[in-house]
Length: 229
Image (cartoon, rainbow, N blue to C red; front, top):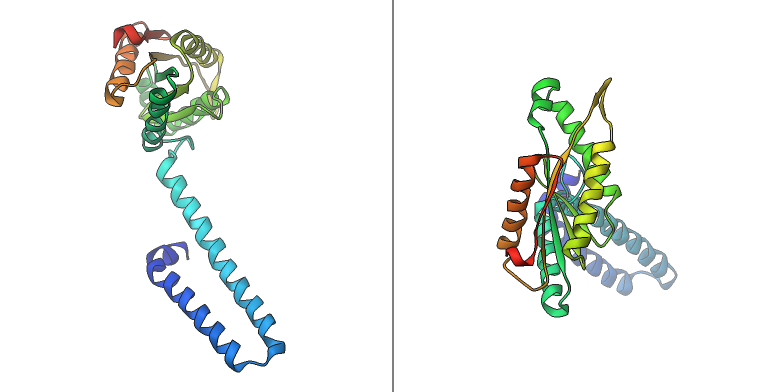
């Protein structure tokens, strides 16, 4: 039914508006006064039902567009939408902005050893642990594969490093489970921070470079601050 509404909405919506208005004119001219209000109320209920249906469809389309299907957190598209807004705040308010690039260490052996279902379950559990540590003003996204990002507005490099080490420690201490298997994992994190506006692609590249250095040690947090940009 939802597919029907989505497919034919360009026809359904105009037809609904036209038909309701046309019917309203007809009953105003031809129906006795005592029946007008009940009929109008019925039409209003029909209109509300259509609006509710399309509202739920729009919400579903939004979730599919901006949320990762596996983990339920924001996806890369949402990340880019948010970082554009946050970069504008850096420009207008001169506030710091930090970015964490997160990668699961030695993730491939999990898929190879236990199967891709186990790998998917681990990704969902890691996303849940990360989400527990993220505020509403911060943006947790799945970057792709086993990589995640966290965008930290109004956060300088020192505070970003403390936050990154906190979530690194939380993952290290957490016991991930798949069926009767207990899996221990670590993550590496690259941190980049700015105090003035810069190209978004370059900002992401710096965080990725910091992650690359962190991956050389594993279970580690590496930073690249403003001076390294």
